[in-house]
Length: 617
Ligand code: FEO
Ligand code: CA
Ligand code: CA
Ligand code: CA
Image (cartoon, rainbow, N blue to C red; front, side):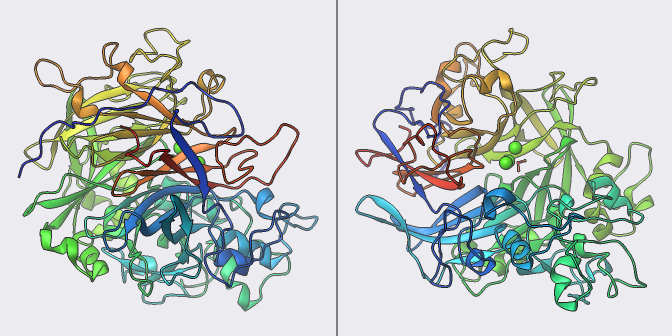
């Protein structure tokens, strides 16, 4: 049956005021509590979280990681009260992680091995069994599904880069595996029940003190230092410290087996995890491109048609990509028990495209294949000798074909009714010249949300801008969507549709004009109901802006990111990343008392109606 083209959902809460406290804010009739904060033990190998920062690396390997980000709920046995929450852990705060911050010698070299291991273990992904008992979601400690993937976990490589010389390392001489996943920001999931975690700002974890390769230069591998100093342990050269030395990828020997030159080539991918099978290995799906992946979202599914995955490269002037599978969608595959084999079927072979927003409303997907024509009239084969080489330097190939530089593409979300794809463009204050139709504001401090529909051909799409972020203090040229105090926002980042057609927009705010009014937040709107007489969906205009409602505000200092919902819509899960001084108690809405300083913990917040009804309506 064809679903109706419009959602019947009507937001049933009043937009809430901005908030600037060490607590979350929610609409009347709702409550919010803390679930699975950083350090929550997943099994008995982990000691309880210690408020003095004294937990060990071993504790951290068996407990929830730090700085929660993208997330998805996978029901068990189709239940609405029992499932697996997969949570990304984007990065760490070394000062909060350790009792007194990182320990180093007078030269800045790290001196405590367990601290570095703890930092690596605080990255990655948590798989957490949770159950609703007596109206409260709880972590099921020691459940066999509970797992940690960290910055050191061994993962398989699949797709065009697997078994190529680019991936040959000391650890994996045949180029079939890589160690760890880092800076897991946005997420996705697949129609066959796996989790997708996205490697975003991984280049900063590596350093090359020699000559950069083209792809390293293009993506921004550091030439001076690594983000957390994992590579420079005082008194190194001990073979057991291979686990840290590998972050220095300077070519120093005669081959990839004598140094770590290829170590970073195992990073920058979409990583597939089967949460239902605790014995499965994670797989890096290289066919979806190598860049700073923010998220990964599949397009409207149709039996007998390819599956499309969208992913933004979150950096200023970077691009939007899609991957179109060679395999055609077979609905029976949704129920396969061999989920990683489904990933092999749909995510290893296909075509990667990059977006060109040609003119107002018109877009073109440019394939990144060897015969693709460059803006100079050559082909990519003149610059790359294989598809693997193109993927290794995806952004460099996209430069050559003339992709449109965007204002930091973050998450994408697909309307379940219309199939339209929405994408957050978080901000770009470095756009001082050269606007383009899709990124029309100079000094774009506040960001916008763009939207497109696929055309009849895989290379065509049509697009418009859905809403512009802005403070109410801005003039009309900036506040183009007519936002008011009850929905002003900036820096849209997390984005998700639920199956009722409600679009949830989360912010990661860098704009003082809005932060002086409110902390980061989550808003909601039902886009498929905003249609004009010609049945064309509208930009959020003066007539429709009242339908964009503020649902949730986070505590001081945080970013609100990651969205999940229970199958009965009675629970929304959202993540609080890097709060200043929160949570004070299990009640997420209880402010930390003035004058009280606590060790901050990123956490998932459970948001429910007090009467147990559907959230949002
Ligand atoms: Fe990690 Fe682009 O946000
Ligand atoms: Ca983000
Ligand atoms: Ca962001
Ligand atoms: Ca962040």
